[in-house]
Amino acid sequence: MSDNVFIFGHPLIQHKVSLLRDKNTSMKDFRDLVDEISMLMVYEITKDFELVETEIETPMAITKTKVLSERKVALVPILRAGIGMVHGIQQLLPNARVGHIGLYRDHDTHEPVEYYCKLPVDVADSTVIVLDPMFATGGSIAAALKILYAKGCKDLRLVCIVAARYGIERIEKEFPDVKIYCAAFDEELNPNAYIVPGLGDAGDRLFGTK
Ligand code: PRP
Ligand code: URA
Image 1: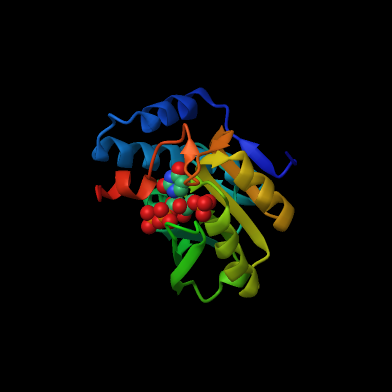
Image 2: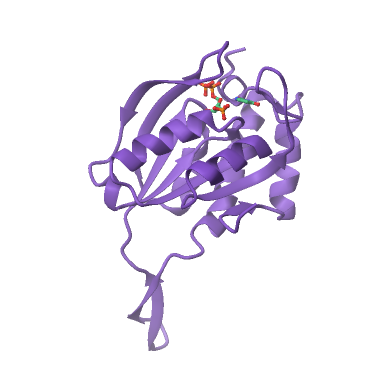
């Protein structure tokens, strides 16, 4: 895998992913875990954000210190399951705009079908963080990245919770400039293109639709 792929080894993230995978985890706990894992991942995703020097006054003295430089950030969850990752990331990046791309996988072909797209007006000038907990064949992510590149986006980062080798290798090949962050990595897809062991259907588990 290229240097653009980051798989988290942090114990807190590993622990929470194990709870998420458990089929007995309730909908509420599943939702909370997706939220917490997403928030923890922000630490790495923003590692290259620039700082600028500023002067502040503490109760003790005037001092020079550093704050984040102005940077537009857009979060783009892929509907539905990506929505579950938005709140955790907003906890740490409260000024990020949010765009939505609606895609579902056709049950027979496993190909993504687009049904919605609404993005911030200045998305092309933003650091765009695409959110989808499940990265299986990479079809949905490829479709979302195509839409974002067509809008002129240049700095694209992809954040997933469980990623399969097949999807990662596909996106690395088709979109070599995209940085990929995954909380966990699985080798296999089953004949229905579900990740194994994975965690099942993320959308259904988040929203209780099954
Ligand atoms: C799931 C998931 C991804 C996609 C991953 O969404 O949230 O978007 O499948 O599979 P891929 O990498 O093979 O494209 P799904 O199509 O089930 O829609 P949903 O979020 O509305 O449940
Ligand atoms: N979508 C999911 O929700 N889970 C998978 O394992 C694959 C696609």
